[in-house]
Image (cartoon, rainbow, N blue to C red; front, side):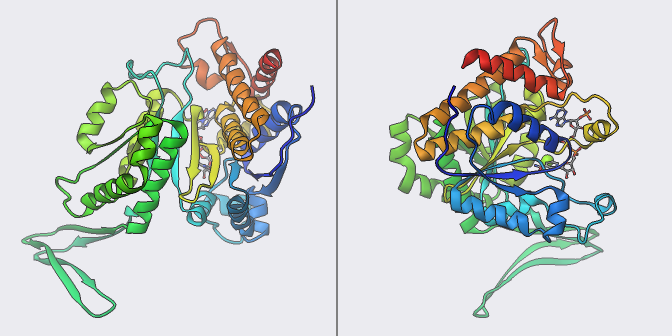
Length: 402
Ligand code: NAP
Ligand code: MG
C-alpha cells in the first residue's frame, strides 16, 4: 500500500512521562507505516521546556496559529516536587495555560463511547460534549474575610474618574466577600467557538446560566450568546438542521440527566469544571475522553483529557509491566489528522483517521483492552493487554480493515 501524503504540516507537541512513551508507540505502529507524516515537531517535554526557558511552548502555539492544527501529548505542570526532580530553573507555567492564552480558545471534551463500557446513566446513548469557558469568574476572583461589623462595597473607578459604587452587605458580624469579573471579548470568543464547533460537528448547542438570580453578571453571558447567535449563526444553524437552546442551569442539569446525549453543553467556567468531571466519570474513564481547544479564529489543538500517568511511568522505569490506555492519545492524533485533511481537502487522510478510530473501538469491543477498562467493562472473557500490546492489537485490527 502506498503511504498517504500530507500537504501541510501538523504541529506536533511531544510531552512527558508515560504519555511520551505511548506517543512513540502510536507514531511507530499506527501512523508512520501508513502516512508520510508531515509534522513540525516541538518537544514540550519538561527538560526541553526548561532548556529553552519555556520558549518552545510559545513557539509551538505560534506555529499552531501559522498552520491551524496541532496535536499535543500530555505534559507535566511543574510543582515543588518537579522542581527537584527535573532541577528546574523556574516553576514553568502550565503549557496548556500558555497555549490557551495565545490561541484564546474554548476546550471541548467528549467521551469516546464503546459497547461494553456503558455509562452509569442508562439513557445516555450518545456522547455529551462539554464546552468550558476557560477565563475568569471565580478562577480570577478576589476574596476577603470580613473580620467583623462594617460595610463591604464594590467600587468601579473609570479611567475618566467616574466612580460607581454598590453596597454588597452591611455586616453585623464576621463573614466573607468575593469579587469576580469577566470580559465581554472573552465571552464573545467563547460563544463563537461554541457556535462554530456545533456547526463543525453538526450537534445542537445548549447553554445555561443562572440569569434569573444574577441579573447583570450571568444575564450578560445569556445576552451575548443570543446577540451573536441571531446576527451570525441563526441561518447557518437552520441550514445545518441543528438548534441553539438556552435554559437555566438547574433546568439544564435536569434535562441532561434525562437526555440521550448527542449535543454540546456550553458551561461557564465553574459549571464546566464541575460538570465535566461528572460527565466523564459517568461515561467511564478519563482515558476515554477527547479534548480539543478551538480558538475563535479557527485554530485547533487536539489532546487527551488525562495527564502524563506518572504512576505508570515510574513502574515502567523500574522495568515493570504497565497497562496504560492509549485511546485518548490515539484520538488526539486522529482528530488532528482529520481536521488537517478537512482543511487541505485530503480525503485519504480523513478516511485514515476514521479507520484508525474504528479499529481502536473494534479492538475494545472484540474484547482486547487495557486494565482500566477491564475493571469496568460489561463484556465477558476479555483479554487484558499491556501498554504496547494494546497498540499492537489495534495495528492488527487496522490492517484487517485497510
Ligand atoms: P493523570 O496522569 O491523569 O493520572 C491519574 C490516574 O488516572 C493515574 O494514576 C491512573 O490511575 C489513571 N489514568 C489516567 N490516564 C490513564 C490512562 N491513559 N490509562 C490508564 N489509567 C489512567 O493525573 P496525575 O497523575 O494527577 O498527573 C500526572 C501529571 O500530569 C502531572 O504532572 C500533571 O501536571 C499532568 N497533567 C497534565 C495534563 C495535560 O497535559 N493535559 C492534564 C492533567 C494532568 P491508576 O494509577 O489508578 O492506574
Ligand atoms: Mg476540575
